[in-house]
Image: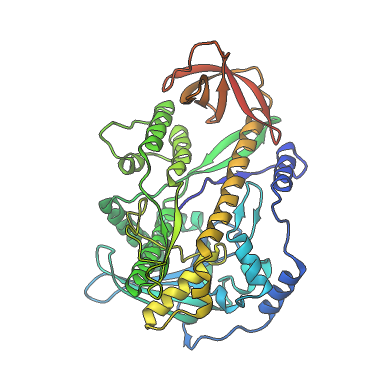
Length: 489
């Protein structure tokens, strides 16, 4: 599921870049890998990993990622399936287990980090670059070990057959979203890309029918213009949504395999509490987003235009409803301690779902893939997988909290940078929250720029008008030191 995407394009010594570096120092974000971890990764990258029996290098796979990406977890190929209609999808996932020995220094460091952590100007990776951007990455024109999914889809995009095996694969092309979209829009795309669009649209329709939600979260880009930081939005191309549907399809298939086998780890999310939805409705009103009382959250999202600034800001706020997601482990060998989940459905997906398509960037995916492979073959999961299951949810929760903290602190820092030169200015805002014990304090959402900040009036002043417009004056905005702070104007 999406995170808030934020990118900074600025000189290395500029104030915002310095503040981001200070943030990483303050939060003790690792700047590199210990020597023994680097050494083990280098050895694993140099040696030839075990060669899978199944050779799928003739399959013309391709990857679709942001420009410049080197940690390529997934490669795909799509074809039409015979006279009966439908599609055949091959989806290769990097085989990290072919390089990482259980119990070694590299494995221990991956368990400590759990996830790749993203900042607006850089990222803190899960694995050293020797693996994540080289030997284990599905880079084009290189033979790579992979977990190769094979799906048969019927004419409406539903999965009718699933297979998974270890394979040797060879990607033929590294594509980016803009290039894929351009080829499709101009009619120059090869058939596999045309089929990506066809199946993506079909899967989006199936998602709509089951009540699922996909957030087309636009990327926020912070640039300097005339000596001042400004916020711009990059609207995601439709191809990004179609590509995401392939990953969702795979995660849903993985969940079903593990539920049937009786052992697995799901990504779960309860339905959003009423208070969170009510708060989001207030943000919608603040940004002029039409959300009728009788319209569901899922339906209103599909009516939004990510290219509209207010809609883009609202989509950023919608990521708050994904809080509360976690990992649920179940094991048929220990039904009393790890029973099957009573409610395995992920509320946003509207189906059981598992993380399994990004093992270069997420620890749990390495284990999920092994559990799925065991489920398909009817074999018992490897012992190193089963013994890790107890600790995995807590390890992933710790890593996810670290990533969320980095995102939250980065947002606060960037918003302060946007307003640092505007102390004393008055803005139109909307009150989206009020502190119960102090009705003169709360949270406002500016109309322009789309910044959220604390507002506080005199203790004996009038209470803040929750859900209504309020003119506010900027009091503080110091990147890396003070959060954005307003007072009623």
